[in-house]
Amino acid sequence: MKLTFAGAAGTVTGSCFHLEAGGTRLLVDCGMFQGLPELEARNLAPFPFDPAKVDWLFLTHGHLDHLGLIPRLVREGFRGRGVCTVPTRDIAHVMLMDAARIQEEEGEAALYTAADALAALDRFVVQIEYGEELELGAGITVRFHDAGHILGAASVEVRAEGKTVVFSGDLGNRGKPLVTDPAYPPKADVLVLESTYGDRHHPPFEESVEELRRAIVDTLAAGGNVVIPSFALERTQEVLYILFHLWRERKIPECRIYLDSPLATHATRIFERYTERFPSPARKLFRKKRDPFDFELLEYTLTKKDSKRISEERGVIIIAGSGMCTGGRVLYHLRDNLPRPESAIVFVGFQAMGTLGREIVDGASRVEVLGSVVPVRASIWRIEGLSAHADQPILVDWALHADPGQVFLVHGEEPALAALAERLSAHGYAARIPAWHEAVVL
Image 1 (spheres, rainbow, N blue to C red):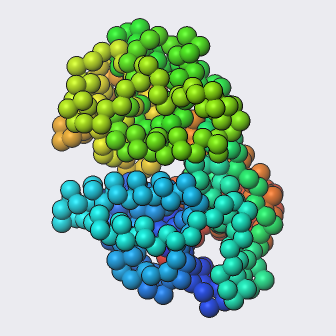
Image 2 (image 1 turned 60 degrees about the vertical axis):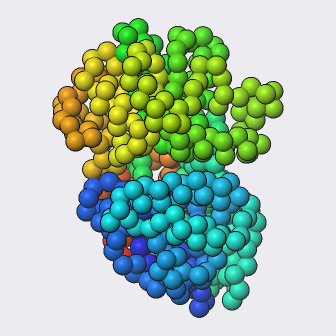
Image 3 (image 1 turned 90 degrees about the vertical axis):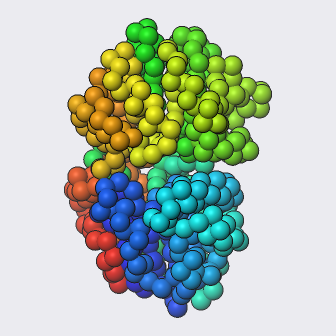
C-alpha cells in the first residue's frame, strides 16, 4: 500500500492524496492551491500520478481547495468514478461552475473551462450517506463519517490489505448552529489529519457572537460600514443565522444587511434544501417557517449594478466574498472602507499566508487593492470562534479516538503543523509532516 501526498503537504490548501492498495488506485480530493504565487503555481504542475489510471475519486466536501482541480484531472484522463455525499454533489456544481467562469475570464491563464467543469461533475455517479459502506472490490471498502465542517463534509475511512486508513478531511468546530459536531473516527492504522488550527484554541462560540455584536454596534454608532469578508459556504450562512438572531433579540440596531455575493447566494439556496440536516435548534426554526436566510433587513445583490449602489450607503453591514480577499466583490468594499476610520473590517475565517486578508489581519498600514494602494484606517476585527475548522484540543481529542499506528499531518502552515505534532507527541504519537509529492509505503 502506497500513499502519495499530492497536495496540502506543508500548506493548508491543494488537498489531494493518492492511495494505491490491492491493485486499486484512489484519490481523496483534488483541490486547488491558494495563497502565495509559488503555491498557486502548483495548480499547473504535473500530477505525481497518471489521472487515467485512477479508479476512484472520493470528495470530502465542496470547498475549492478540495475540489478545484477535478476538471483538470478529468481533462487529463480521469475516467473513474467520483463519490461524495448528496449535499456535496449540489455544492460541487455551484463551486466548479463559478470557478470555471473565473478561469475563462482569466483567458490564457485558465486551468479549465465550463465544459471541463461539467465533464468533471459527470464523474460523480455515486452519492453515499454517512456510515454507508461502499465496496470497491478486491476486499477494499470505503465509508464516510460526518466531519462537521460544512454541509455534507466527510472524513474518509478506507479498509484495504488488512489496514484501516482514515483521511480526516477538514474537521469542524463544535457547537456550531448549522452543522453537527464531527463524528469520532474508527480505530485507524494510518491517520491523515488536518492541522489548519493545530496551534490555536478557539474562544467559545458565544464569546465570538458577542464580539461580532460589539463590532457592529460600535461601527454603526460611528456612522461606518461593517464589511465581512466571508466564504460562500457555511460561513456566510452562519453569519446570516447569527445576524438574524441578534436582530430578533434587538441586540443590534436596525440596518440594511447586504449579501453581495452571487456564489454565496446560490450556496445559501442549497443550504435551504437540507435544513433537516441541521442541528436541532436550527432545524426547529426552519420548521416554524422562520428563515434566517430571508428576513426583512437582508438584501441579496446579484447584479453588478446593485453591488455598486452599496458604495453610496453608510451604516450598513456588507457580507461579500472572497473570504480571504483574493478576489470577488469584497475588494470593492475594502477599497471604499479601509481608508475610513469609522468603518470596520470583520474577519470571521482563516486567512492563508500570501493573501490580502492575511496582510490586513497581520497589521499592514497600507495594502494594494484593485491596483491602488489603500491606507488601512478602518478598525480590524478578527473573530476566531466562528471558524469552521477544529482547533488543537478538538484535533487531539479526535486523533486519540483513532489511536493510530501512524499519523501524517497535512493541511497546515509550519507553526500549526509543528505545534500539533508536539501535542500529539506528548500523548505518545509520533506524527510525521510529509513533503509535497512525497510517497510513503504504509
